[in-house]
Length: 451
Image (cartoon, rainbow, N blue to C red; front, side):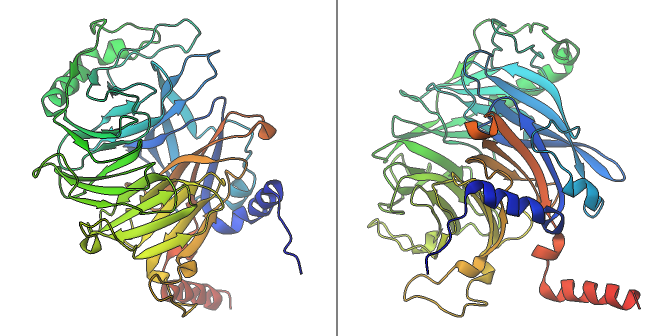
């Protein structure tokens, strides 16, 4: 019997009908232009039923409007507050009242990647189609009106060191104000912005009033200050697509690229690879994340449609390494992976198939009971599929560290759905991720209550 092929539209309709059952809260916000990156900023305020969060996202235009870095304020509804009617009646074609634009920065070129500085998350770095990394203090930057011909905003700092475009690979260090980048020059570049952070933070107080004026001009020089790299690391044979710091070290980091390699680096021992896994996947590697819970575990995502988890204790200098797990749950290239901050065994992966999968490797083998000779069967690990972006690829997502199990995600919508982009903020219902014992005990309590 032939397996029925379900169209993207049918799959999306099926998902939408299940929204009230699957989600504790969900917001869809239609974007005029696609966004290639989204990041949570600081939590701004707490109230009885909602928290106010800062959000960073981009607008990638066709040239009829300027490209922008957008700073928005978003209301995030607390767990078990949203009514079922609200959850079921969201409109994917409308702008949400939960998302309000706070400030617009006119970016010199497309914003391909945004990363916030952990030591001061009012300071962000961006990648565009150029060799430079741009640093912005979003509080001191003037609010611009995104009209054609409007003056481009000037970054607070420019990081130089690449000799070819560095478009996607970008990371900030949790330990020190260090920035890491990779590019088409096959290099990984490291900067320290420590000496500049105090200056940027001090400007926030003196320029706050001026920066809040629409179309206001800053006192910054026409040419932004720039700094060179702390180190340049060579070992890739093709474009470096993603980089990540070790969560417990400012000197250790990893990178992945179009050469199918996963490379581990240590700045203390030189500019050559410490470990190089020559064929980490069967295709280009697009993304990498280092576990904040166990620094031995690293996730990679690839054009071969899989996510793999490596244990760095099992990586050898000969370049041969088998992953601990291979996760196959996407029908297209994986573009983004990230560990969950709230449970050590959980992570998410987003892909060109428009699906954001949530996995728990602790579930591997719990129900199927079958394992292969080398890599266990990981089908049990997939426990949630977010299909709200099913019209086209998901470019980026991020867990909210201060609001457990809340995720923001952005997609690049296809022309069949009028183009543009979609921003979604969502939280799955807690009955899905809590332990079976807890869930059964709660359901039993409600059952007894109804008698």
